[in-house]
Length: 440
Image (cartoon, rainbow, N blue to C red; front, side):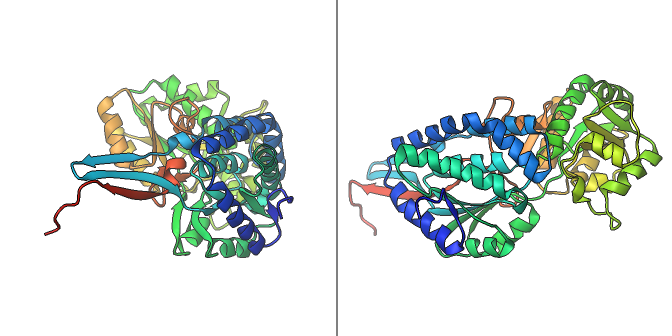
């Protein structure tokens, strides 16, 4: 069982192997755990480009060069065991120590949009917390996920002699997933999938940490540095063909600065749509007859979308901006394609209200571009999102700017926020009594 690279053909096998691995892993010291995490970081560095290319090929989504950036970010900026928090309270009769300890076997559900970086990020976080993990990839990213599992297992086996700290079933149908989630030896479910995965996980009656749907919406007011706002929005929304769950999807802008904003976007290689005709052409391919998102175009390039929509251009573009109304499905649904909406508002107050409505209370990601510090505060308070970006790019919200920990699981459903090792442990209250006192 230890020579299969962490890949197993049945739920019984994968859970049993993980449970055996946990019994060995929990005997390692914190220092040895840190060494293991460092070995994974060093061992995977040379694979970033390969993993990215394989993910693009298998899923048909995104840009390999951008995926490689995210994979490298997950490797280098995901916190390790140093993220774990202990606390002490001392009184005249003794000491209380609050210390973290692992759940054990964890089921981690992954999306098709960010399969490699999410798997690596969750692996480092979960192992840092002392857990072992059964990865349940999206069916569209099954092969690359199994390959990463095998590579990581070999790194750990060669350096530490331990098998199956990281496992993946050979296939991952909904039946397999439900069986793993409901297995009595699985102690925690970490869901980074969409709303369907979240609902299935929450129905298990176990501890669940869950991400969910998003519709990242950004406000641009009349005081903003328009060139900077356009640069940041273009950078985030064009990155990996806008399939990252935190990337800008809607821009709600005070109408007096729309001309300047449009000019800035066009200088940045954005195809700007302000005609009803072209908007309808895009709607016909990006939406179904029921006005739902056509997933066929998820993660496709702007050029491919424009071509299939019958919009002829004389050069290449990396992002489409569609000027539309607040009730259009492009605004109310997450398209997961290199397209942003631009919705005009008469003033800041109106823009903020439209933006809050567009985000739909998912509590995921939002932001604002403004020089007015009071408006920055008002917007953060109004959105109540897990990630909120002020005068920056959505990518900064996951740590690309070099500030803060990197996480690819944004637990907006269960409320833990951007997940790192400190969120993936139980907490033990240890009480050391020095002096017995009277209880009467």
